[in-house]
Amino acid sequence: MSDSTPDLIPTEDAVAAVKLLGEVAGHEGDVNARKRLLMHRLQEFTGADGWLWSVTFRDASNNRPMSVGVIHEGLTDEQFSGWVEASQVAKPRPPEDPPLGEELAKGKHYTRTRRQLVTDPDWYGNATVKKYRLDRGIDDFLYSIYPLGGDDMCSAIGLFRHVDREPFTDQHRRVTHIILSNVEWLHFAGLPEHRENAVPQLTPTQRMVLVYLLEGRRRSDIAALLHVSENTAKVHIRNVLRFYDAKDQLELVCKFRAGDGQDVA
Image 1 (tube, one colour):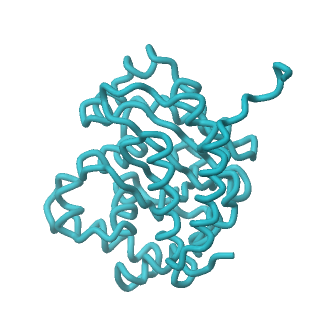
Image 2 (cartoon, rainbow, N blue to C red; image 1 turned 120 degrees about the vertical axis):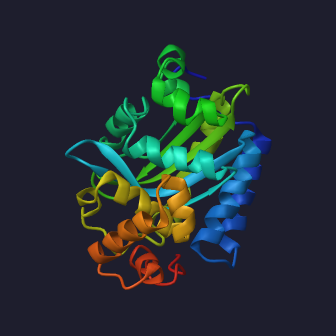
């Protein structure tokens, strides 16, 4: 085999991947149910402790990502709020953001281990990583980014491991990429109806509120996650709903999901 030919994954992994793709395609649940099934199996494949899947916009004015329609497993409220805050208000910015954005601009689906994007010294020496990841028990990541048209929107998937665990391997990366490369219909299913680049017009706090609202959080939950009073959270929620011309949280969620989420191939 030539040096330019990538190593083949083990036969048993290839067979398992094919079975998984068939299982997901034949699942009778909605889009999110199929995504959760796929990610649960990928979590088993890679030995991940949890995962996130979102549709992510990128604000060209400051190169900050904004994720909507987030689903995840394995994260505590503290860990999830840390992920949201790190992407919007943290200084310095998460060190993986620039290389992820550069790869996305190429317009191709890619999958990378954290070490391919950020060296160990840069990762462990970064104040944002320490505050929002390591101090909350999260360490290594495996990223898979699938463009959804242009260089400003993508299907973003992250598998993670807890602190004190070994990093993801190249084998984990290859299996993950092969599987996620074969579910194009699932990346595009249930895209937000509100696709114009309006999200960046929100303030960082409003962006966080938007994510929490789309996740189904109540006002009291949002207040606790933002460390503000319920009255302050109410104002933020009202402003977000007004921005999207939604009368309530349910209507807002509907605006960010195509129909009832059953739009699969």
